[in-house]
Image (cartoon, rainbow, N blue to C red; front, side, top):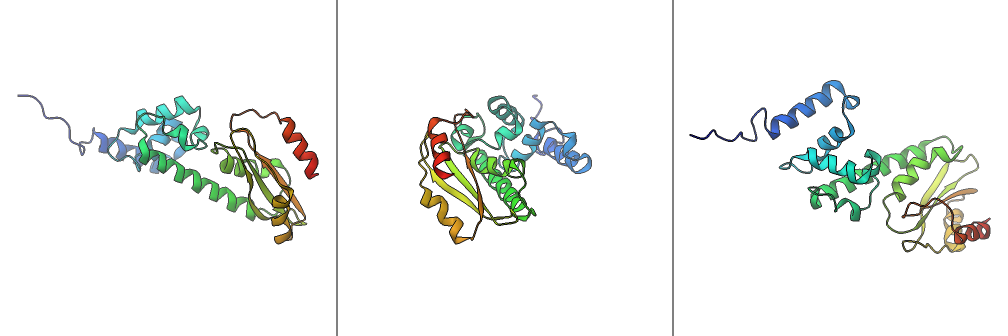
Length: 203
C-alpha cells in the first residue's frame, strides 16, 4: 500500500515550513534571514498555494538584488517564473508602500542638506519607471520640502521639459528652491546632450 502524501498541514509540509519561517522572523528578526528567505516569506502572503522559495530565488537571480526586485517595473516582474499576476501586483503594492514611507521621511526632515537626503526616496519613485521622467522637489527658505511631484514624462529615451510646468508648482507653493531629478530607464547615468541643454535652460 502506497504511503499517503503529506498534507498541507503536515509540520514538514508547506504550511509547516511557512509557520517556521514566521516563528523565526518573530524570534530572531529579519537579520537572521538571507535575502531570498525574506522574499520567500513576503511572497507567502500573495501566493498562499505556491512554494515561494524558488520564486524568491528566481527574482534575485534575474533582477540582481533585494533592492533591485523592489525597484523593477511590472514588465520585468511578470517575466519571473512562478510570480504570476498576483505576486507581481503584490510587489507593486510593496513598492508603493516604501515610496510613501520615504515620502513621509523626506517631508518630515528638518531640511534637505544634500543629494543623499533624497536619493532613496526619488529612486523608489522613478526606479521602476519604464519611460524617462523628471521629478521635482520644491523647497522653502529652510530647505524643507513643501511639494514634490512629476513634472515631465516621455518615452524610453526622452522626456520633454517645459519651464512653465516646472515653475508653476513653485509659484503655487511659494517655493524658493527646487531639486530636479531625471531618470535613464536603460541604466546609463551619463547625461545626454539634451540633458545638458535643458539644465542650462533652467539655470
